[in-house]
Image (cartoon, rainbow, N blue to C red; front, side, top):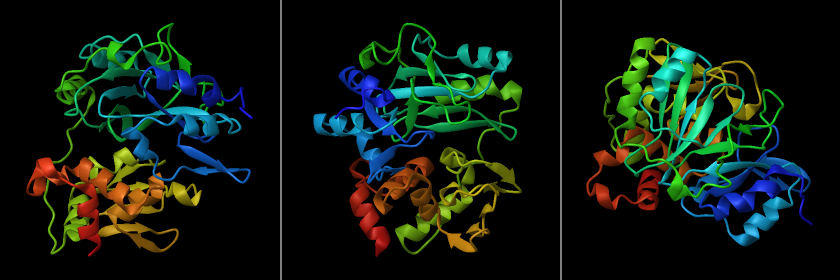
Length: 316
């Protein structure tokens, strides 16, 4: 029996009809969820819905889950500019380099605006000092949409105006230029934005070791994108909260010599951390980390890059 009161039951099917990949969000969180045996948990491998829309059978199951929020898994076309600040000057600077979009949502502060764009536009975090002020979200990411409940405020996300993803086809969204990341960097520079450190290739006698070594040399390119609570710079690395253990202390250390959860006294590889944060299998974590690091550019036959084959080689 369909739970007609849940945000997913209300909006999920309409969003999919408009061309978006609507997936369920666990109540009180920002994460894709699954309901089983009377309990909510994380959805395993939700990123598969970035490459395909849910089926009618999946939509029917999810619409029956109690209090299911609704999120959008971003494919290679849909883009989202997530501005996480109410600073009016910073907001004006960002808006000055973006096409105007009528389709916007708001959570606790700032807004998220929706666009379409080419696969050349990839996800990027933008920090000013220690604060994350903006995320450029692209393929492989997801975003929560109204009327899901915001976990911090306890109130629903809202649309800014009459135009929403529920009544706007994806091809009707304004288009972002391929160089949007550079435009955003220029807009944020007067506020203290500093570009990530220059890329440093890693070393290793296997692809798995090379990928993890590259991750240790390029924290700026992937650690902020984990969106872990308490993420902050610490020397040349980062500290964050190991949210998958439901703790509050920033005991997770990202150091060039390695990654360690000091609270659990457990070392991790970069791929381990991605698997734990997103609750995804090895292949998905490898693909996510490789995309963030541009690691496919280090491999021969880049246009023929095969994630499954790469993951199998990494295991060997």
